[in-house]
Structures are given as C-alpha cells and as structure tokens.
Length: 252
Image (cartoon, rainbow, N blue to C red; front, side):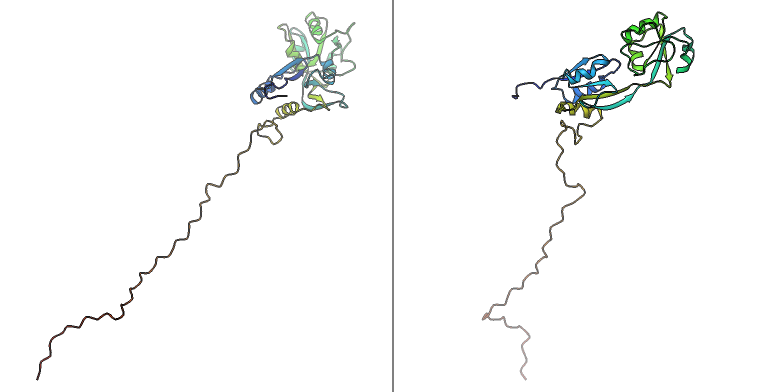
C-alpha cells in the first residue's frame, strides 16, 4: 500500500440489542483516518459472518464455537419478561419462572437465552423472530422472555417488562476470527478493554518523552580558586640606600 492510499475500513458487526456507539466514538477520536463501518447482523448469523470474513470483529451473544473465533466476554444482561401494561405481572417488581406456569410464553426461533423450553405453556407455533413475538404480546397472545436490551429495542407504549429471576441470561462478547487478529482488531480490543492511548500495548500510542533531569537537582558549583597573596617585590641589588638623616653631633 502506497502512502497515498487510505487504510481499509474496519468492519464491526453487532447483533440486535448491542449499542456500540461508545466504542465507535473512541475509535473516531483515536483513529480519525480509519473509517469504521457498522454491520448489523441477526444474532444467529453473527458467528458465521465472522468466519466468512464478512466483518473484522463483532459484538455477539455467547456461546460461540471458539475453535475458529476468539471472544472476550464483556457483560451479562438481565433477563426480563415482556407483558401488556394491564397484565398482573406489571403490578410487581419482579417475577420468578414459576409465576408464569399458567401463562403462554412465546419462544421465537431467534431466541438468545438458549433454553430448550421457556417456563409456562408453549404457544401453538414458534414466532420467526423476536420482533414478531413482541407483536403477539401486544395482541394478547402470550408473554415473552428476552434480554433487557431487546425489550428496550422493541419498546412499545402498550407494553412493559419486569425482571425474570432464575432464568437463563445472555452474555455479550467481542469476537473475531482467531487467525485474523490484525492491527486494527488489536486497536479495537484495546478500546473495548479500556486501554489508554499511551498504553504499552496500544499500536497508536504516542511516543513517550525522553526522561528529563530532575528540577530539584542543582548543578554542583565549580570550585572557586583561592585568592592569591600579593607578592613582595624583591629588593634591587646594588642600588644605593638613602642615608639616614639625623641631628648633627656637637663637638666638644
């Protein structure tokens, strides 16, 4: 690549419910010359997209096959149950899975909680997507258990949600192909992990200043020469000395 060519864009995939805005902003501040492309992807297709090199890295939901992909777990989401606002569940602060035994709990095909069968009674058919399941909840067909970020993503004025205890939880991670840990991927890992621009592991860190002398350290004063004693001028040899003048002696 010549100096006139711009670097390749960094492609970042993310699944529904994940908001990468904070990390994107830091990237733009630290690497303004490298374009970052956001690639939205369904949760069930994120891992395959990374394996096919459709993105350089991505935020996805665990578990993921780590034989080909590396992953850094970031955070675990609270699981909530989405209900109509006039439902009895809306009157409490939280519910347990056993409290939904008599309710129809929808199980969409793109479920992100990983359980074989949600609590309560199953619906006649499984909705294709979480968005479809939300519409069925609004129509009074059943309830839906999802990570809290998905409940916020599909917010409706006629629906609400409450924390669901003793239920599986979804864990979000940053993942990338194990054999494709490029410099840009390493830069983004540093941003997600909270490294500063001057981190020793950051490729874009600024050069460290050379060590300076301590300000309090004063230079040693030079030794002062001792003052010389004035030398006496030697007497000149052979020069007549002036006669001493005194009173003349009286003759007797």
